[in-house]
Image (cartoon, rainbow, N blue to C red; front, side, top):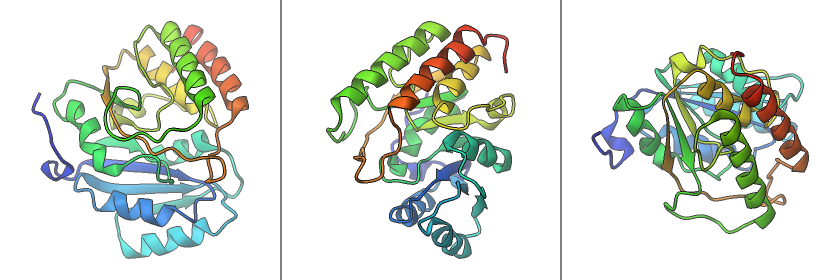
Length: 244
């Protein structure tokens, strides 16, 4: 595999799908950071009924660049529902999930695209735990829960991921077209992991940096989402080998 060293080495081929909920303070900066990356062919943003002016910010962003297409849910449904809407509208051959905050760095798209462009992978996870780049030090119990959920997911799917809950997941678009997303909230992460494993997709991991947020800064995932994740691992992993 040819090792890529920057996004500048890749022609436009990437569709970025971004769910957004009450991210008016950060979303314009994230959009700007995404659009300056050479691989980005399109940016599909789904506002999940924000109440803080996010939609108005997104309208201004879309007016500046034709690559930006925006959609809005009239009622808040959750990250999974926003991604389901976004995946229906993306057109590029490769697709990546990008949060609307500043936790993940679009400068690292080339890391996830490398195995896809080399035709070695169908899905690439960006792992926060493989020892690359800067990582903000935050919640110990979150890291414990993440490790436990990843282990349970691995047991159910028989894959050896280090970071099932990562936002940065990149796909060949034809893989996404074979999957029906059922979860509306953060259960998307174990669901999509189980379903790509059930498809027999070639899954790679690459190390990424991570700039986590505190709850005061807008972090939204909580302990009830961890309990839902266990249910999703059981439903889509242990019991779902024939579900697509």
